[in-house]
Image (cartoon, rainbow, N blue to C red):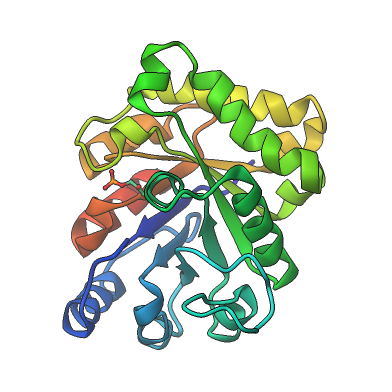
Length: 251
Ligand code: 13P
């Protein structure tokens, strides 16, 4: 049985004051012990969130890491080893906003994935198709290629210590959620791709859905057999809404 997981990606939001308020709101949420919950603040706020949520069951992750795991001369970047030192336990890699706006390639994403694991962080590999790709019937092909890019270089075994997030680009921040069936189809294909190399591992890896998840849509999505939780953007900035999404994963 896979443990459900709900992750909140705060993206480039927050001030010290609003982050403090969000931490307070999160600390008041009643969340089932059967659900893993993590929040991903901006790197600037990681230390504030780690100390604000110390002693709680919330894990803290970063939204990105450098391609090299160790400290060094790389202006503006943050090494996975530094994130680990700051008590992050997870890191997003390959979010579509970084792929599309910052031009991150599959090669870069794979290096970040490896850097994360070599520093003891769990990478959350984000994959997903654009609207044009979906309309052209290329969804499964695009997602498979994004997953293969990592498997071909690092091997399938690395997914024993990783999470996958399927985030259709057209559903991110648009209010358009993939239907539970649309999401399930892609999640099942991802799992089948892993199963072709390692059935045991495929049964264990958690695949989260992301894209306009709200408390109102969460239970139906999380009820699908291959959807193990969510990667939540906008709704994770509201502690009560995020708490409700976490509770939907535990029910
Ligand atoms: P929204 O929930 O705001 O659509 O964002 C999803 C996302 O990109 C999470 O990483």
